[in-house]
Structure formats: C-alpha cells, structure tokens
Image 1: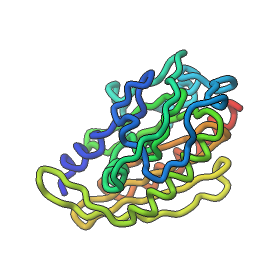
Image 2 (image 1 turned 135 degrees about the vertical axis):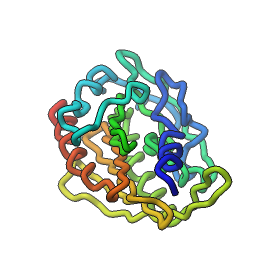
Image 3 (image 1 turned 90 degrees about the vertical axis):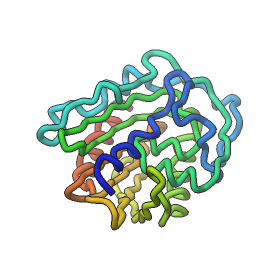
Image 4 (image 1 turned 120 degrees about the vertical axis):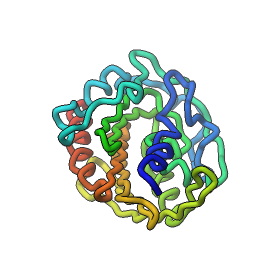
Length: 237
C-alpha cells in the first residue's frame, strides 16, 4: 500500500466535533459502549475547556526533526462545551476502520465535553497526531474500556481503499505507569511500509490519544511523546 493511500486513509476520520458537529460523530459509536444517557453526571464543572487543553499539547519543539504543524488538523472547543449525547451503536467493521485514522478515539462511541487536537507532518507525510479529551462523569473510564474492547475485537481487520482490500493486524498491550491507565496498539500490514502506533491514556477525566504513522518503522517514537503529553495533562490537575 503506497504512502499516499495510507495518508488518505489516516485523515479520513477527523477528531471529535467542535461544539458537537462531529466529523466522525455519534453515529460512529462503539456497539460495546456502556455509557448512560445524559443526566446529573453531565456537568462540566471542574473540567478543563478547549483552551486549557490546547495549551497542554506538545509544541513543535518537541516533535521529530522536519515535522511541522498541519494547520488544517488543529481544532478545539475553545471556551465552549459540546452538549452531552447518548452513544449510538455502529457495525463492528466500521469501528475497526476508524482505528486507521487520527480521530480513532471516537471509536469508543462517547462524545467528550471539551477537546483540543493537532497534527504534525513531515515532507514524507509521516504524521504525529495528538488529542486531549475531557469527559463528564465516569465517561473517561468507559472510553478506555471501550477502546480496549474495540482494539481486541479488531485484532485483524480489512481496510478498503480505492476498491482494494488491505489486511491489517492490531497488536495490543498495556502501558503500566502511564497515567491512571494506558494502552498501546500497533497497526501493521504486509502491504504497508512501516506502520502506525496508537496510544490512549487516562489522567482523571482526561483521555490522551495519539496516532503516530511512520514509513520506516511502526511509529514507536510516538510512545515517548505521548508519555510527555500525559505528564502535561497530569500537571493540570
């Protein structure tokens, strides 16, 4: 699979919506989601807004050489909040397909109250995408549980691009000592050059999600960047 095809797939599903107008949207919810309907726990009291989360994102100086900010991938909720919404089930194969995009955290099927995200890319179209999502009530714990279920269920899945099928494999492991809980998943395929590494970590009610796509390796450098991002999130508590 050419890097151009991989790149097209990676950006096909963007991050959580600004003020609820999701590019991936609640229709892409995970069928395993156990979140409850909006209620008393829907309050945003004590949660960081998009501006605060944006200030915690890693700067350009922390990125690998030649990586530059992609302005089109920078989004946040600013000082607003996304209205609470109940999860909506989607077919399992759609949830798997979402793993191959920068907004993969949305495969958990739960809309955050606030978020901030951006992407860094180089001339070869290698990418590091970072996102911070703040959730109401116990939704952050449910997000982590749902992501683990999806990544486990999608151990092998098919990516369709331009009428061709590419068979991908997900290798999942936990990351002890990173935030309150964390997981790492590496996505590879015989048809791809390199691979992608996804990391999700919870810090209280904030979920840190990153996507590192590399042609020369599986994106493991993104794990170290994610650990620094987790420390930033922890410092804000």
